[in-house]
Image (cartoon, rainbow, N blue to C red; front, top):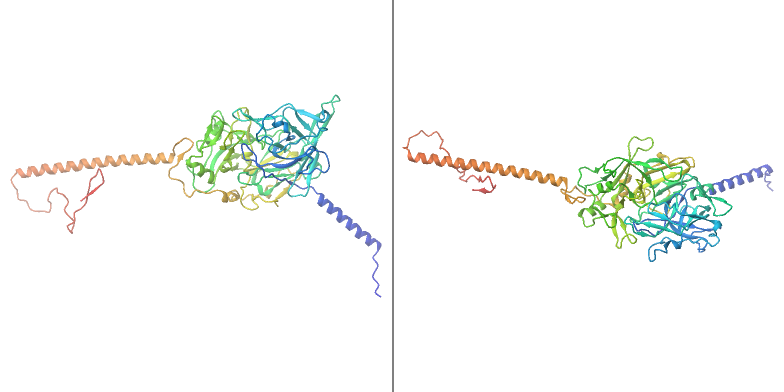
Amino acid sequence: MVKHPRIPKCAWGINILSVIVALVLLIDVVNAAQPLQLEWSSTHYGPDGPWQAIIVSVGGNETDVRIGSSNAGAQATVDLLPGSVWEVFALAPDVCNPYPNSRCGKGGFWTPNDDDTNPNNLIEISAGLTPLQWSGGDGNSFVAQAVSVAASNINGNQTVYNASLASVTNATITNPDGSKRGPELGFFSLGNTSPSQNFSLNTTEGTSISTEIVIAGLQASNIIPSYSFGLHYGSAALNYQGSLVLGGYDRSRLIGPLTTFNHDNSGSLNSLTLLDVGIGIETGGSPFNFPGTDQSGLLTRNTSEAGDIQVTIDPSTPYLVLPQKTCQKLSNYLPISFDKSLKYWVWQTSDPNYKKIINSPTYLSFTFPPSLGASDNAIIKVPIALLNLTLDEGITNKKTPYFPCLDLSNNDGNYVLGRAFLQAAFYGANLAQNQAWIAQAPGPGQPGNGEPGPVSSDVQALAATDPRPDPSSLNNDENAFSQSWAAYWTPLATPPATLLNSGSGGLSTGAKAGIGVGVAVGALALIAGALLFWLRRRRAANRDAAHERSSNEPMIQQEDHGYKGPSELAGGPDGTAYATYEADSGTIFT
């Protein structure tokens, strides 16, 4: 019988310890903080879009909060636009009472439980709704409850149970023409430099409570690695799904370099400098009336002076909120006109250049100061196709293509690059480090470079101490932008010989120059013809006079030296008559 060697007891202990260590490490890996790639709704919103939204569950403090819960009284699944900086704003049904039979509340409602609406649990807010056109009213209430998000790269839902959450029962959106409408959906908070929000309850004791900003709460629970986000809105019109990553960013939505700026410690977004706005052609011929492939110097203050302005990046605002003089300058090159009734710039769809411009590789360029460590200014290109948006019910009775350049009369110089800009730009921030950044985003083409898919393998974590993504990890290919749009636009083969200047309704500079040259050449030809005609008549008159004199004088015999005096041309060697030209008409006579 073969005797097996006995395993020392210490060896068993070592093996068991190794297994325990491996299990602990496995648990750490499973529980390790990682970025969340949020899910987007298939429903699109307006009435000045279309716009995309993310899916969020709000309400309740139970530990089994789930997206799609049927317990509507405690919690509800709603669509929200990314963009507020403090609370998550969820609409309550009462907000739409003044706007029956409208799209108000299209994104869903949340009604807090009766217990939740106890005065001891509520804080009324009468302001603080962040979009420029929103105005809050009495009755909006803050409720410290759960907010849960679903991520496409992690199983299950991730919840902050003591989140900053507002039930909006009174809100009005004022259109540029002064008409009013109710909101279609609320907002998801992207946070600010403070991780929490403190309130005093409406009680005689004056008790205060502290709630967590959602992204900060996810980091505090070790669900995500940092109090940060990365956002690219994509395009609903092109079915180009947006990207919102909490605790990191999607590297496939970034084309370097980055332009960095700070967040304001008060919680509002800090501004950055916009140096210029221009129009350009990425490739192919030009549908515009300017020479070359770009026209810069279009950023103009309302004092008619050219110069830089301060802008904020705000995804809660739909438009490019710029000086009216800048919008007017753009209309010199684009087939747009200001609708005095709607107070929007609308596309002139009957203009022959309209389809040429929106279907060809044309873009609006936004120039910012150099990125960190760079010497050249940073330029973000927004294809003009993305700025062919639609006004709809709530603003106008019929769908109207519009150009989202807007100078809101009450903005007091607070210029904003909103969702229209973020269709083609990436926006991110590490709020704990008070750092934000923007960069060029790719178009909807090219797999791995903007191509929408179920889960992006390019989702990257951002460490809590990293103020921004590592520039070396970004796509710095100068052709990436053009390649990502190649399948979505049609370059013009050659520059048109003459083009209408759609903005002014006149001929282009090239056409006017061509006409001027033609007129000058024609005038010179007429003068030359008249001179030749006069010389020919004079020569003929002299010849006739000489012939008359010779007929009245005696004949004098002369030796023939070959000269026969003035005469019509003789024929050629074969007897064929030479052709003569009538100078004033150019017609050949024989």
